[in-house]
Length: 418
Image 1 (cartoon, rainbow, N blue to C red):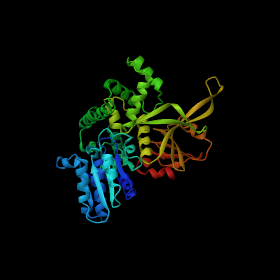
Image 2: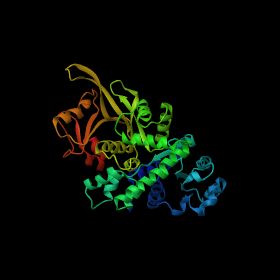
Image 3: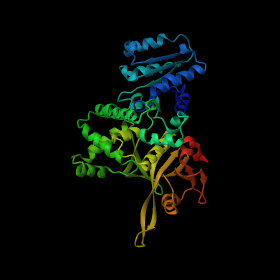
Image 4: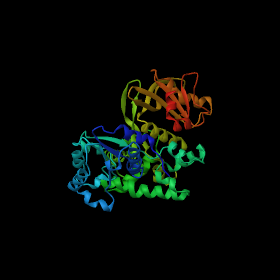
């Protein structure tokens, strides 16, 4: 089964001939090699590039062991260049080359070599990989399969059927190869334990792996909820009976976020136009891995829905924050008190901004008022949106709020721009 990954392929195409090394990053098993060595390679050939002008090297292939030596690799590549036309150098698992950053920088000195690489060791599974190249690289970050990609690969299944699987097993590409639910769950649990936890532990030399695993359990249990370092510390010390300092927990969270497994989303004061230091929300790059970390025991569709929408917005190129807007509300005693109302997502992309609330359903007027109040308290003119699963169709209401059906958004994100 071939899933085209058009979103990422277009990013690679736009980056052609930009004078930088294109570094494809992302968590393990999300499809980096397939994107670069199959989809992009095929695109180049279809675009008229001669195959002998595409130098493709898989460093994890035993037959290429000699090329892991930097000088041998340099000699091999330069000896393959026979004319002044553009050559495309594609190297997978480039971290297996010693001093790979220096080697790739050498290729950038040639006007007719366009460089593309991917890797899967701890350094390439980290947000700091591009700093290895000190301004000589551009990053194309790839995520697991989104709902639309899986739905389009499941022609005989309804949106609701695909959704039921997606909220449980996520979008790691290999999931599509399994038919039985227990096989999917086993694959994800092994991947989480043997790959993702191991990567974070080894990269950061963590001695107490059980503390890291317990922290991930806490983050997975509280997706969509505001969490502060102090609150998490208290949970560890009083409930988990583990003696961890706030600094240690903060450091571990930084390691987890740095690995692409979890995104730390900050709060933004909309009226004050400034960030609030604490608390934050944490969202998982893949819900299947999140559920595997909990042994598939906590699958609440409400919070998972929010996580999925965050991932989609993030992949669309938005900078996403959690919004806070101050407004007076009456308490149970009838007195007006100043409260911080939450806006699920404040999304910025260049000069565009949209505010989004997420609701699984809007069954009555009370729920509608609850979900729309924070949007109505925002005084600027940027678009305000509620994404909900039970909207019959996407439409504007009489208050100027765009009500978006969940599947309309997931299958055509441009619906947000109506």
